[in-house]
Image (cartoon, rainbow, N blue to C red; front, side, top):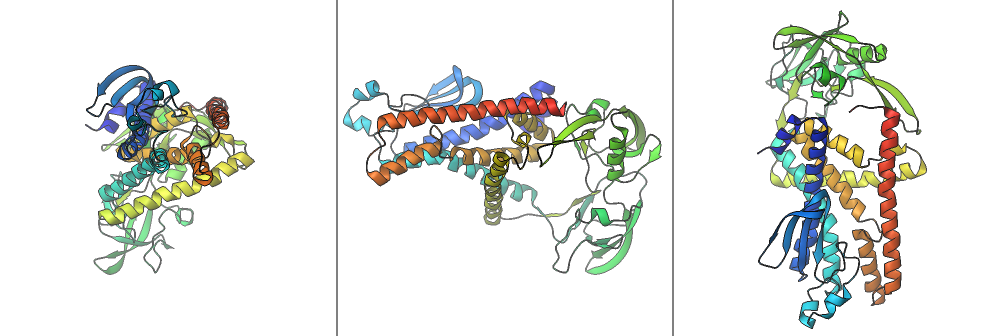
Length: 456
């Protein structure tokens, strides 16, 4: 059953909530399973594997003595190992450990060899990265990569257009603007501003190995390719695949023309003539204001109706084998990891607004938006967040996995654990830091939402 296909049928708040819970549950389950399975391989016994916190809704004891459970609060999870004082493995339950035999103590987190403890802790973030790599690799294998040079795969239906292009045509230039360079690399969207603003352009294509000129429609029509839930366009009844042919009686052929008219209306009602299934229908909607955060920390007021466009054809794609797909998946994951530190630095120094930092409200909104765009976008979003959570957990903050690894590094260097009082004091500081960050992210979400006055 395709969960991503079911989610968009839900109502607004339920839609967002379910999408967020599904995304978070997948990421948390993989993270905690990394801790569990590497701990088990290392001889550390897991007493509880919990998806969620609070009252237990369902549980089952397996033959190894681990209780698997689903709890009522779905925002997280944990693995409790034998001898742990709490779910965070922040300390040892001395009373419980005192009752264990020496052999049993070897199967506690504290009693395991240093390498086993370090491997078990590091496995959570590593499994997040593995999830991201596998997701991106799977998408590359299932969907493929856009073929170079840019090649037409299929066409989107458009009303009354001149189109002499054919599937399989390699696009070399449009309206006299070069799209594909001598190396065969295509920059289709990068030349958008240079194109003649005409409804019909001359295309230079390579067909069956021969170059020829043919006529075709302007490449970026006012075609609805994405529709945001609860947006002005969605509320008015627009659908993916609709083509806007006129705004307030003025004919348009370019998505940028639609964008300009939406901006110029500054919230006043617009009448759209929309082509759908061979028929023209009228829709009236009011653009909604969105105050977008800028790099200087300020906001720029823009007007949106909640749609995105695309070119009038679907590019041909080439499938890749598993090895190449894994390479591309690893590269995509690494690209995300490499961008996060610089983004955090920009946030801390004030180079970009704090509204660029996503808290739980923003995460939920984005989850719902991505789910509404279909399985590919939703799964890609899960990969992105899984990478971010994996990296965040490696930060050297006590309570987080990275903090535990710092303690283990100290133990490896000095041949003894950190003093208990120091350990507990730093864990308390780490907990304070993490809770402060969570509260800041939540408050920041609320403030930025109020400043944007965004309805999505």
